[in-house]
Image (cartoon, rainbow, N blue to C red; front, side, top):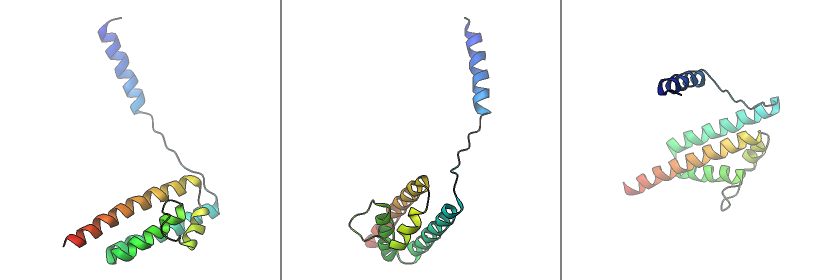
Amino acid sequence: VEKSDVKNKIERLQQRLQSINVNVSNPRSEPQQESLHHVNAAIDTLIFQIQTDSLKANIMCRQFLSATGSECDHPADIKFEKLLLGCTVEDQKDVKRRLLGLLDHIKAITSENIRE
């Protein structure tokens, strides 16, 4: 086998791989879509709260995280928990990751405010 043959084969394989498009979607029932919509609306409210009152947003985010089962030292927001349980398991995991990212953002903001 010659080196040029191997290079040509690699180029053809790379072209084939580049033409592949993978799209993964979670099938949701109508109630699951509605629950996810309400969860996203609650998170939008949290994001607005971060911009206006980071201390209150910190509490709200921890309550939402408590509803996901990851923040044990704060009481869960029961309404949010009910909405979250109506979502698919994958959506629940995504929401948890999103909330953890928002909490990190809130911590960064509050530590900046303390330094000022």
